[in-house]
Length: 393
Image 1 (cartoon, rainbow, N blue to C red):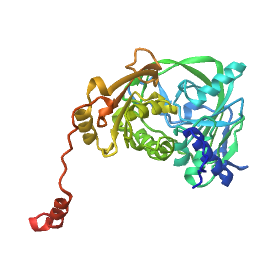
Image 2 (spheres, rainbow, N blue to C red):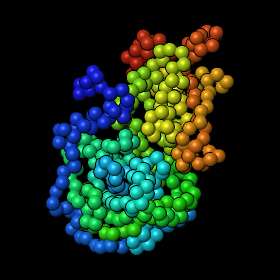
Image 3 (tube, rainbow, N blue to C red):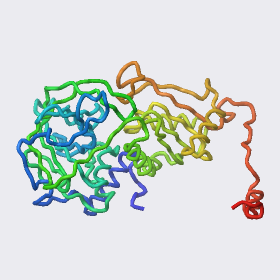
Image 4 (cartoon, one colour):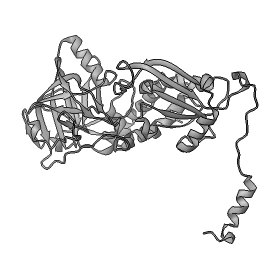
């Protein structure tokens, strides 16, 4: 194993260790001199020439929906790449929609403290691993291009941007370069979001474009988000599967997780655990609420490891059967996603944990717990072996 016996304790530290090992193996972004994405260079460029979509009837305008937004921490020089929608409001003007907990927003706050504008580059049309990496919930300080290289087993080729101090993917279809104001904002939205509802108007930073570079014959990429299931659902499921092993490093009692489509990833997670002691389910819920973007999860449902959390009917049956509302449902307060319109206040509110595990005597349950009905295994094998004799194919 490449995780030593004295591996760092936290999930964040373990992921950083993994990526440092890959970096040492040559997975850092590879700088090249000539890039396809700079075959055509326009200064300052014109955003209205791009075929940007107006997705839903009540959207405020045209939005870039698959952007890889590249910024840099002014203190460390480490780049970040996130996926934050961009509203086009003019030939060289746009609004950057990032949430307060996003790394891009953190970089912007640091620039505001310095009283300086922030360099920004928006890559459109990269390879699938690089696009996915922009959505991955990586710890702060991890360059998403390094993670993309790990996923594709090859470094991402980059080139210096033309007008800003950033490295950009060399094989993107388009790069939009610019400056984000540290003082000016514009009203952004509404926008038909991945929750299935329109996100309301709010003020976000203004971006002024300084260059638009592209391939000679570029292809403009886009996605449409809305009531699930849409394309973004599969980004989330990829995260669920890729990061489950790392989650198990921190919480080895977790067997499986499922972010159901109806939960739009920050409203619900189903967790199967190997229960080992009283209060174990509450411990797991508390631990998950303390991990990165899991802090935004509104509902955490805990079941035991004999339940398939990807079978929603089975999971619902267990929850409805096992839960005593007074004993097994608990609430806490903490950070919420800005898109949670049910909370009385933005970004902060209540969350619910549901312990649907079998309740032990030590947890206050004095009655015997009934055994679930299952067919005798020998009978199942016998019937299966004689299936054709019964006239079935």
